[in-house]
Image 1 (spheres, rainbow, N blue to C red):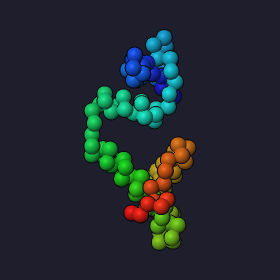
Image 2 (image 1 turned 90 degrees about the vertical axis):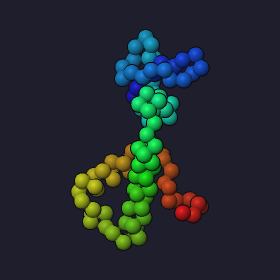
Image 3 (image 1 turned 60 degrees about the vertical axis):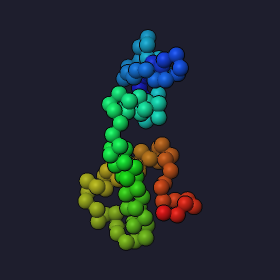
Length: 106
């Protein structure tokens, strides 16, 4: 949880890890307003944004290969298994769309 201060138009003006007189509104660090503030502060990196989107696609491809018995999850290195399980848990908690599910063809 982070705490934000907004400007007169409701945009996030600053973010704090602790609540104080200026930062009164609690928000999730993954909230789009907080993420947008962070990107504006650090500058946009199109390659990094593309990498993040590609990671989700790769996770879905791995899940698809496992579900079709092309590979076994346990065939992956232990470190990869741990990272994939952590991300799966986070995605489920955020109820993020599965990029390979649905009616849209690839």
